[in-house]
Structure formats: structure tokens, C-alpha cells
Image (cartoon, rainbow, N blue to C red; front, side, top):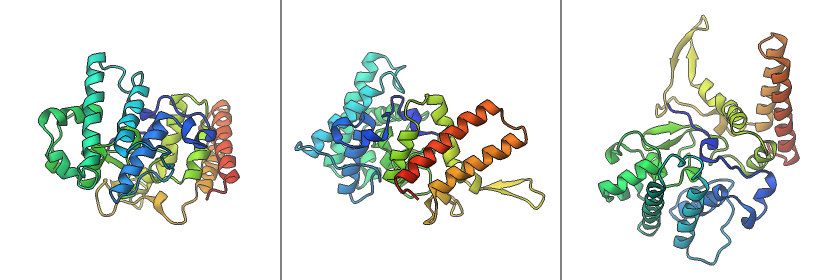
Length: 291
């Protein structure tokens, strides 16, 4: 199973919860989530829980094209930085054409069938946009894996709420995800404002660690026994439980830091820095009455 966080897709994050206040101030990442969520809702699917309505009189097809273009341009010094300018332009135009056709021709309703209708050159564009190592085998795709191939990486969704975002045949984990409540997303963005990419990725990994741990099983002696893999009927996502509490999750992190410090597993400096973050996130959650 591969691991990916939203940081990989967003090297220039919106700095604070205030960026959620109006469409004019929202980042290219947020706008991609807003627009493509409308596309998904129109297709009878669920988009980002934190998405806001698109305030535009333009046809949805135009919004799709501009949202993709703006997000791609925001990543030319990020995940697409190594591509030559001519290749970046080819990817931008090629994928832009694909997503506008998908929106017009039911591609987000029937993504597997839509992908089957693409030429090999078009599938290669999709492969390169999504940074896939191997060519796309459409017949091997799940509904979620196919759907996310037709979305910018910033707007990809966890369709079956298993805590994983499948793109093609690969799985990733990210926080916040498409299912994260809007008040939690706002609290997270406030707490991570101005944070380095590396630090934010560490905290994102810690937020999704319950999913990984819940699927690792040990024997009676406490030794590793087996791991339930994605797609298995026994795979569980504790974060999808009705009684899951993000506030409790931050307290678990704080308690874990106290334990690690008491055992000498962590330096005082690292303890202070991480504790400051989890306290800040916890306060931001409580300020928004988040569960």
C-alpha cells in the first residue's frame, strides 16, 4: 500500500481558516475541490465535505477547465516541477480536454467506460498527470480508482469511506480527506498555518495512523501476526465510526507525547514542539465545536 498525504499535492497551502470564508480568497486547491465536487454531485456522487458552492455564472464546463488550469499552474513548482515546459503544457491542455469531456459526456457517472473510450495517447496523459509508474489497464480498475484518474490530485475522493484514496490501482492516505468535516478542515488549516511541508506531513501521518494500526493484528504474545490489506472485506476505518472524535484523537496524541517523554523516547525540544501543535489543533477544534 502506498502512502500519500495532501501535502504532496499542495506545496503552497492556504494559510489559515480564514481562507475558507469566501470563494475569492480560496486557494487553487480549494477551488479545485469546490468545482469538481459540484461535478461529482451532478453525477450523483459525493464530493468534498468541506467544499463550498461555486459562485460563478459561467457554465460548469468553463469552471472545470479553469479550476484544473489554475491548480495545475499552482503546482508547476511543486509536483510538476521536473517536467519540461513543453511537457507541462501538453499535460495541462491534454488533461484539461479530458476532464471537460468527462464532465460533458458522463465520465464522472461511468468513469471506467469513459476511460475505455480514451486513446492510448490520452491514457498516457492521464498516467503522467497522476504520476503513475505503469500504463493504465482500464479493465483492472475499481470504480474509485477510475474516478480519481479523472480528477486533479487535489480533488480526489475516498468514495467508499475506507480511509484510503485509490487512484488507478494504487492506494494513498491523506488528511484532510474528502470525508473530513468542514469544521475539522478549518481547524487543521488554522493549526498548520505557516508550517513547513515536512512538519505538516509528519502530523498528517500521525492523524491517519489509526487506520494503519487498526488493520495490523498481533498474536497472543504481542508479536505481529498479519495485516489486513486494502480491498479486503475485513479492512476497517476507525475514523469513519459515528462516534469518532477528532478532539479525543488530539488528546491521544498529547497523552502519547507525555508517555514518550516520561520514558525518554523523545527529546524535550521535540516534545515541546509537537505538544504545542496538538494543543493548538485541539483548541481550534473546540472553538468550532468539532467532535
